[in-house]
Image (cartoon, rainbow, N blue to C red; front, top):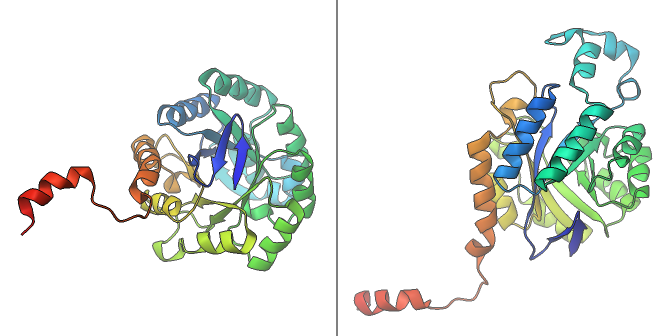
Length: 285
């Protein structure tokens, strides 16, 4: 199974599609966003991902007016609006990514945001775990005929069944995910990856929120064709997603290890390598 995203082919027996999830870790700063794009590009990620919301459609007036102190003001609405990029910022991000030669996409949280992102001809659409049961959004994303990346955190198999029924499997990567930030080791549950591949007969990826990098590398060894991880300039920065994100050195090691998984796994045929012959002659008794 294979899928074309941007100008590259990913899938079984193909290079892993590595997504650096910037999300809202830019903290409303275009300069921060560019630094994070630079980090992802420097360490060999295939794409960066943002999040897009039409604030008044996603949140109720009561939610927006609720008290919540932040660097942007005293209400939840101040926070949400402060973190949200508009056309000017995304236009600059689009140009910047094209200059570097790195793909970009976004998780859209509402139907209007899908239309907004289509202005930039992004390489794919991501459906976040929280929206897996939003059938209007699923149908809207499917209508774009772009590759679809679907996260399955906090979802039952029955809910995933319905989402896959709507989206189909031809242009889909279904991501195993646990929606806690950071995720406890005993809730990562990587054995779900081959189970999802067997149940849906589609490409399966892994969206990780764990501390460290080992589970994300193991996920590829277990069949994940794509890995998505949050990245940050500094885990101590203000923001709800920073603590479960990778800084530059962690991202570098993750990409390095994922790119080596194919060599690690080999072909499954037991043999004596030529490099072993001198050792065998010396040590065999």
